[in-house]
Length: 246
Ligand code: MF3
Ligand code: CO
Ligand code: CO
Image (cartoon, rainbow, N blue to C red; front, top):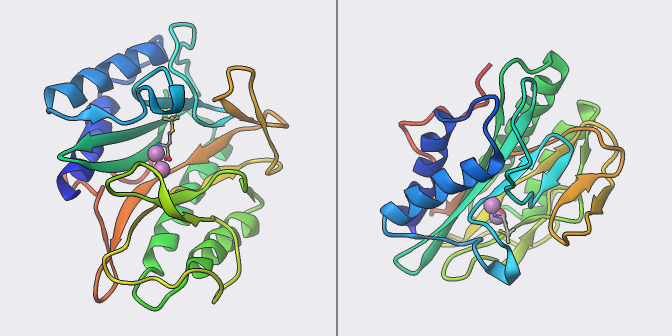
Protein backbone atom coordinates (compact mmCIF):
# COMPACT_ATOMS: atom_id res chain seq x y z
CA UNK A 1 0.00 0.00 0.00
CA UNK A 2 2.90 2.35 0.74
CA UNK A 3 4.29 1.69 -2.71
CA UNK A 4 0.95 2.46 -4.34
CA UNK A 5 0.61 5.68 -2.31
CA UNK A 6 4.15 6.75 -3.24
CA UNK A 7 3.41 6.24 -6.91
CA UNK A 8 0.25 8.37 -6.63
CA UNK A 9 2.35 11.13 -4.98
CA UNK A 10 5.03 10.85 -7.67
CA UNK A 11 2.36 11.20 -10.37
CA UNK A 12 1.34 14.58 -8.91
CA UNK A 13 4.98 15.72 -8.80
CA UNK A 14 5.44 14.60 -12.40
CA UNK A 15 2.39 16.50 -13.66
CA UNK A 16 3.11 19.62 -11.60
CA UNK A 17 6.13 20.52 -13.76
CA UNK A 18 4.15 20.04 -16.96
CA UNK A 19 1.15 22.28 -16.20
CA UNK A 20 0.95 25.39 -18.33
CA UNK A 21 -1.52 27.92 -19.71
CA UNK A 22 -3.12 26.65 -22.95
CA UNK A 23 -2.97 22.96 -22.04
CA UNK A 24 -6.24 20.97 -21.88
CA UNK A 25 -7.29 18.86 -18.93
CA UNK A 26 -7.44 15.93 -21.35
CA UNK A 27 -3.67 16.35 -21.89
CA UNK A 28 -3.23 16.32 -18.09
CA UNK A 29 -5.21 13.07 -18.03
CA UNK A 30 -3.12 11.48 -20.79
CA UNK A 31 0.21 12.38 -19.15
CA UNK A 32 -0.92 11.01 -15.77
CA UNK A 33 -2.42 7.89 -17.36
CA UNK A 34 0.79 7.09 -19.25
CA UNK A 35 2.97 7.75 -16.19
CA UNK A 36 0.88 5.38 -14.04
CA UNK A 37 0.86 2.65 -16.70
CA UNK A 38 4.63 2.98 -17.26
CA UNK A 39 5.03 2.36 -13.55
CA UNK A 40 3.09 -0.88 -13.83
CA UNK A 41 0.04 0.37 -11.96
CA UNK A 42 -3.58 1.01 -12.95
CA UNK A 43 -5.39 4.38 -12.62
CA UNK A 44 -8.20 3.48 -10.19
CA UNK A 45 -10.75 6.05 -11.47
CA UNK A 46 -10.76 4.60 -15.02
CA UNK A 47 -14.11 2.78 -15.42
CA UNK A 48 -14.80 3.10 -11.67
CA UNK A 49 -18.61 3.16 -11.59
CA UNK A 50 -18.33 4.24 -15.21
CA UNK A 51 -15.92 7.18 -14.72
CA UNK A 52 -14.49 7.67 -18.23
CA UNK A 53 -10.96 8.99 -17.48
CA UNK A 54 -7.87 8.14 -15.41
CA UNK A 55 -7.71 11.15 -13.07
CA UNK A 56 -10.18 13.79 -11.90
CA UNK A 57 -9.45 17.38 -12.97
CA UNK A 58 -11.48 19.98 -11.07
CA UNK A 59 -11.09 23.60 -12.23
CA UNK A 60 -12.10 26.70 -10.22
CA UNK A 61 -15.79 26.29 -9.25
CA UNK A 62 -15.61 22.52 -9.75
CA UNK A 63 -15.55 20.97 -6.26
CA UNK A 64 -14.57 17.42 -7.27
CA UNK A 65 -14.89 14.63 -9.86
CA UNK A 66 -14.26 16.90 -12.85
CA UNK A 67 -13.91 14.88 -16.07
CA UNK A 68 -10.81 15.71 -18.14
CA UNK A 69 -11.79 17.23 -21.48
CA UNK A 70 -10.18 18.61 -24.65
CA UNK A 71 -12.53 21.57 -24.24
CA UNK A 72 -11.21 22.61 -20.83
CA UNK A 73 -8.13 24.73 -21.50
CA UNK A 74 -6.04 25.99 -18.59
CA UNK A 75 -5.93 29.77 -18.42
CA UNK A 76 -3.97 32.30 -16.41
CA UNK A 77 -5.38 32.68 -12.89
CA UNK A 78 -7.10 29.27 -12.74
CA UNK A 79 -6.80 26.81 -9.89
CA UNK A 80 -6.77 23.15 -10.88
CA UNK A 81 -7.17 20.17 -8.59
CA UNK A 82 -5.74 16.90 -9.89
CA UNK A 83 -6.87 13.82 -8.01
CA UNK A 84 -4.73 10.73 -8.62
CA UNK A 85 -5.55 7.24 -7.40
CA UNK A 86 -3.29 4.31 -8.28
CA UNK A 87 -3.85 0.57 -7.97
CA UNK A 88 -0.55 -1.24 -7.47
CA UNK A 89 0.11 -4.71 -6.06
CA UNK A 90 -3.55 -4.99 -5.04
CA UNK A 91 -3.72 -1.73 -3.08
CA UNK A 92 -5.05 1.75 -3.81
CA UNK A 93 -3.27 5.04 -3.01
CA UNK A 94 -5.30 8.26 -3.25
CA UNK A 95 -4.00 11.85 -3.20
CA UNK A 96 -4.84 15.22 -4.70
CA UNK A 97 -3.46 18.74 -4.79
CA UNK A 98 -4.74 22.09 -6.03
CA UNK A 99 -2.29 23.81 -8.38
CA UNK A 100 -2.00 27.45 -9.38
CA UNK A 101 -2.06 28.15 -13.11
CA UNK A 102 -0.10 31.34 -13.83
CA UNK A 103 -0.92 34.38 -11.73
CA UNK A 104 -3.66 33.57 -9.25
CA UNK A 105 -5.45 36.36 -7.36
CA UNK A 106 -4.32 36.70 -3.73
CA UNK A 107 -7.82 36.00 -2.39
CA UNK A 108 -7.94 32.70 -4.30
CA UNK A 109 -4.43 31.75 -3.13
CA UNK A 110 -5.60 32.36 0.43
CA UNK A 111 -8.43 29.84 -0.05
CA UNK A 112 -5.98 27.27 -1.43
CA UNK A 113 -3.56 27.81 1.44
CA UNK A 114 -6.26 27.55 4.09
CA UNK A 115 -7.55 24.35 2.45
CA UNK A 116 -4.05 22.86 2.67
CA UNK A 117 -3.87 23.89 6.31
CA UNK A 118 -7.29 22.26 6.94
CA UNK A 119 -6.00 18.94 5.57
CA UNK A 120 -2.71 19.08 7.49
CA UNK A 121 -4.25 20.10 10.81
CA UNK A 122 -6.88 17.36 10.36
CA UNK A 123 -4.07 14.85 9.85
CA UNK A 124 -2.12 16.08 12.89
CA UNK A 125 -4.86 15.15 15.39
CA UNK A 126 -4.80 11.51 14.22
CA UNK A 127 -3.52 8.89 16.68
CA UNK A 128 -4.90 5.79 18.40
CA UNK A 129 -7.73 6.82 20.73
CA UNK A 130 -8.59 10.01 18.80
CA UNK A 131 -11.93 10.08 16.98
CA UNK A 132 -12.99 10.98 13.47
CA UNK A 133 -15.09 13.79 14.95
CA UNK A 134 -11.83 15.39 16.18
CA UNK A 135 -10.60 15.49 12.58
CA UNK A 136 -13.83 16.99 11.24
CA UNK A 137 -14.04 19.55 14.04
CA UNK A 138 -10.53 20.93 13.49
CA UNK A 139 -11.07 21.22 9.72
CA UNK A 140 -14.45 22.92 10.13
CA UNK A 141 -13.04 25.36 12.67
CA UNK A 142 -10.15 26.49 10.46
CA UNK A 143 -12.32 26.80 7.34
CA UNK A 144 -15.23 28.64 8.94
CA UNK A 145 -13.07 30.97 11.04
CA UNK A 146 -11.41 32.02 7.76
CA UNK A 147 -14.83 32.86 6.28
CA UNK A 148 -15.07 29.75 4.08
CA UNK A 149 -17.43 26.77 4.07
CA UNK A 150 -16.97 22.99 4.17
CA UNK A 151 -18.61 20.76 1.55
CA UNK A 152 -20.71 18.10 3.32
CA UNK A 153 -21.92 15.83 0.52
CA UNK A 154 -18.48 14.34 -0.19
CA UNK A 155 -15.97 13.04 2.32
CA UNK A 156 -12.77 11.11 2.95
CA UNK A 157 -12.89 7.33 3.21
CA UNK A 158 -11.22 4.16 4.31
CA UNK A 159 -8.95 2.81 1.56
CA UNK A 160 -6.84 -0.30 0.95
CA UNK A 161 -7.74 -3.29 -1.17
CA UNK A 162 -10.84 -1.31 -2.19
CA UNK A 163 -10.87 2.29 -3.45
CA UNK A 164 -13.63 3.43 -1.08
CA UNK A 165 -14.09 1.57 2.20
CA UNK A 166 -15.61 2.30 5.59
CA UNK A 167 -15.43 4.55 7.51
CA UNK A 168 -16.61 7.83 6.00
CA UNK A 169 -14.30 10.66 7.05
CA UNK A 170 -16.41 13.82 7.36
CA UNK A 171 -14.67 17.19 7.17
CA UNK A 172 -16.95 18.76 9.77
CA UNK A 173 -18.17 17.49 13.13
CA UNK A 174 -17.83 17.41 16.87
CA UNK A 175 -14.71 16.74 18.91
CA UNK A 176 -14.99 13.42 20.77
CA UNK A 177 -17.66 12.01 18.46
CA UNK A 178 -17.47 9.30 15.81
CA UNK A 179 -15.31 6.27 15.10
CA UNK A 180 -12.29 5.75 17.38
CA UNK A 181 -8.96 5.52 15.55
CA UNK A 182 -6.83 2.40 15.95
CA UNK A 183 -3.33 1.54 14.78
CA UNK A 184 -3.38 -0.05 11.33
CA UNK A 185 -6.32 1.92 9.94
CA UNK A 186 -5.77 3.54 6.54
CA UNK A 187 -8.03 6.31 5.27
CA UNK A 188 -8.02 9.57 3.36
CA UNK A 189 -8.54 13.12 4.57
CA UNK A 190 -9.60 15.31 1.65
CA UNK A 191 -11.41 18.52 2.63
CA UNK A 192 -13.24 20.48 -0.08
CA UNK A 193 -13.43 24.12 1.01
CA UNK A 194 -15.56 26.75 -0.75
CA UNK A 195 -14.99 30.50 -0.97
CA UNK A 196 -18.78 31.04 -0.81
CA UNK A 197 -21.60 28.81 0.42
CA UNK A 198 -21.11 25.08 1.04
CA UNK A 199 -23.88 24.04 -1.33
CA UNK A 200 -23.14 22.12 -4.47
CA UNK A 201 -24.76 20.98 -7.68
CA UNK A 202 -24.19 17.83 -9.76
CA UNK A 203 -23.91 18.48 -13.51
CA UNK A 204 -25.80 16.46 -16.15
CA UNK A 205 -22.74 14.30 -16.83
CA UNK A 206 -23.54 12.76 -13.41
CA UNK A 207 -19.95 13.27 -12.19
CA UNK A 208 -18.89 16.93 -12.13
CA UNK A 209 -19.74 18.61 -8.82
CA UNK A 210 -19.73 22.43 -8.84
CA UNK A 211 -20.48 25.10 -6.28
CA UNK A 212 -24.10 26.30 -6.43
CA UNK A 213 -22.93 29.94 -6.31
CA UNK A 214 -20.15 29.31 -8.90
CA UNK A 215 -17.49 30.64 -6.53
CA UNK A 216 -14.17 28.81 -6.37
CA UNK A 217 -13.50 25.65 -4.35
CA UNK A 218 -10.19 24.03 -3.36
CA UNK A 219 -9.16 20.56 -2.13
CA UNK A 220 -6.15 18.60 -0.90
CA UNK A 221 -6.01 14.88 -0.12
CA UNK A 222 -3.61 12.48 1.54
CA UNK A 223 -3.91 8.79 2.38
CA UNK A 224 -2.75 8.19 5.96
CA UNK A 225 -1.95 5.23 8.21
CA UNK A 226 -2.64 5.24 11.95
CA UNK A 227 0.51 4.05 13.74
CA UNK A 228 1.06 3.05 17.41
CA UNK A 229 2.03 6.62 18.29
CA UNK A 230 0.26 8.78 15.71
CA UNK A 231 0.08 8.74 11.96
CA UNK A 232 2.11 8.35 8.82
CA UNK A 233 1.25 10.20 5.60
CA UNK A 234 1.58 7.46 2.99
CA UNK A 235 1.17 9.80 0.02
CA UNK A 236 3.92 12.19 1.16
CA UNK A 237 6.75 12.27 -1.35
CA UNK A 238 9.86 13.86 0.15
CA UNK A 239 10.95 14.97 -3.35
CA UNK A 240 7.75 16.92 -3.97
CA UNK A 241 6.69 20.43 -3.01
CA UNK A 242 3.72 19.73 -0.78
CA UNK A 243 2.28 23.09 0.06
CA UNK A 244 0.65 25.21 -2.57
CA UNK A 245 3.52 27.18 -4.16
CA UNK A 246 3.21 30.91 -3.62
N1 MF3 B 1 -10.21 10.10 -5.98
C1 MF3 B 1 -11.55 10.45 -5.54
C2 MF3 B 1 -11.50 10.40 -4.03
O1 MF3 B 1 -10.68 11.07 -3.49
C3 MF3 B 1 -12.61 9.60 -6.10
C4 MF3 B 1 -12.76 9.71 -7.55
S1 MF3 B 1 -14.00 8.65 -8.05
C5 MF3 B 1 -13.96 8.80 -9.69
O2 MF3 B 1 -12.15 9.69 -3.35
F1 MF3 B 1 -14.70 7.85 -10.15
F2 MF3 B 1 -14.41 9.99 -9.98
F3 MF3 B 1 -12.74 8.69 -10.12
CO1 CO C 1 -10.28 9.88 -1.82
CO1 CO D 1 -8.86 11.18 -4.51
